[in-house]
Length: 209
Image (tube, rainbow, N blue to C red):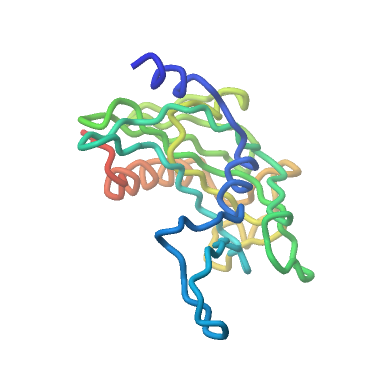
């Protein structure tokens, strides 16, 4: 239990998560493959690569660990940038695309594997401010309060890319570096609720109420 508590206390960055996700790993001897040329079993390697990225990048953080027959929630603090997430180093072929992303929303899970509660943080493109959505309660939050141990799903938008279906595609941007998404505060409120409902429906094993 003490070892598990110690593991829960450390923190990491989102960039470090992607480095580990795309790191080359050597297969175990039991997973050896037969070379088609020499017909001999070889202990190979496996590597996951990102070849292309969408304008809207949704990152689902792993928040549970299987230990024997029980699953435990992970509360590791993953530090992620609100602006300027550079995915270029993690893409196999960069090409000419811009891989800078800005965060526009976060879905949070509070509680345990047996039950919990979902909230959302969303950025208003018109005033560049962040707001917290907890059921019917809406209040402003500071930028340094957005990255927490409760962060579960991160919503990023490629910088300078505005989806055609976005309300902000027909209006000017607000603050420089702020994701350009919402035409009104009412629209932002709707997004906050949608995020919370979406995460409650696709919880990835986390309990909710």
